[in-house]
Image 1 (spheres, rainbow, N blue to C red):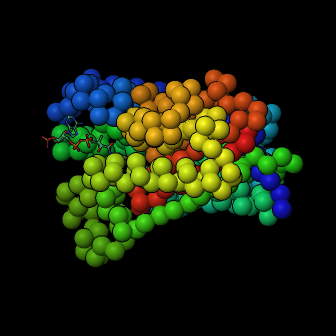
Image 2: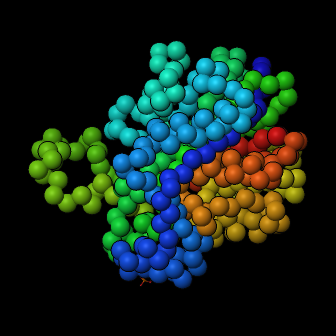
Length: 333
Ligand code: UT7
C-alpha cells in the first residue's frame, strides 16, 4: 500500500469585497450583530460577468501547480467538491478539466457533501493513491454561494454568512506517510435543516415549468441556524477526537487545527474545548465568510503561504455541514 502527501496548495477569491456595512444597506442587519454572532467582517462575492465555479477552481489550481513546479499535464485525476456547480449537470469536474486543457486524458469526479465536501474529496483521493491507481490528484473545493442567497431581511440569517471562492490541493504518492487518516460521517435525518430545495427533480412536471416559478424562495438557502450550530459543536469535537484516537495522538500534539469556517464562535468553542492556543488554530472567516467546500483549502493555502504549516507538523482538518455531514483528517506535513 502507498502513502499520499499534499505537495502544494492554492486558492482564488473574487475581487469584490462585501462588507457588513454594504449588507446593512440591503437588509435589516448591522455590523455589530454580524461581528458578534459570526465573527465575519467581510466576504467575497463574484461578479457573474467574470467568475464561474470552474474558472475560480482553475485559478486556484494554477497557483498550486506553480508553487510546486508542476504543470497541468502532471494531473492524473480530478476530485471536485462543490454544492454550487455552474450547471445542474454536468458537474464542475469536467468544466475544470476543460479549463485546464486536459480533455479526454483523465477522469473527473464530483463530490456534493457541502461544508464537509473538501475532506470527503481528500479522503477519496487518498484512497486512490493508496491503492496505486493514481500518482498525482488534484483536489478542489470551489463555491459560488452569493447567487443562491436571499439578500433581503427574510434571508438575513444566511445572507450575511456565506462567501465565494476556491481552494486547491495537489496530492501525490509519497514514501512518507502524509495523510494519516480521514474520518467521514453523515446523517440524512437532518437534510432539511440546511438546504436548497430547487431545482429538485422530484417536483411534478407542471411545477417545473419556468412560468410556474413565480416565487423563487425554494431556490434560496434555508437554514435552521440554532439546530445546525448545536449539532456542529458536538460533531466537530467527536470527529476530531476520533482522528486523534486512531493515531494515538493527544490534542496538545495538534500543531495546527483548520476547522471549516462556519462561524467564528464554533471555531472558538472547539479551540476552548481542546485547550489549544491561538497559534494552533487557523481562522480566516473574518475576511472570507463561510465558503462551504472551499473554506478549508483556502484556509490551508493561506496558512501554508504564511508559514503556519511546517515540515513534520500535525495538521488537523475538521468540518460539519448540510446533510448533515461531518468529517476530519489528520495529516503529518
Ligand atoms: O457551514 C455550514 C454550517 N453552518 C453553520 O454551522 C451555521 C450555524 N449557525 C449559526 O452560525 C448561527 O445560528 C447564525 C449566525 C446563523 C445565527 O445566529 P444565532 O445567534 O443562532 O441567532 P438566531 O438565529 O437565534 O437569531 C437571533 C435573532 C433573531 O431575532 P429575534 O427572533 O430574537 O427577534 C433573528 O431574527 O437575530 C435575528 N437575526 C438577525 N439580526 C440581524 C438573524 N439574522 C440576523 C442578521 N442581522 N443578519
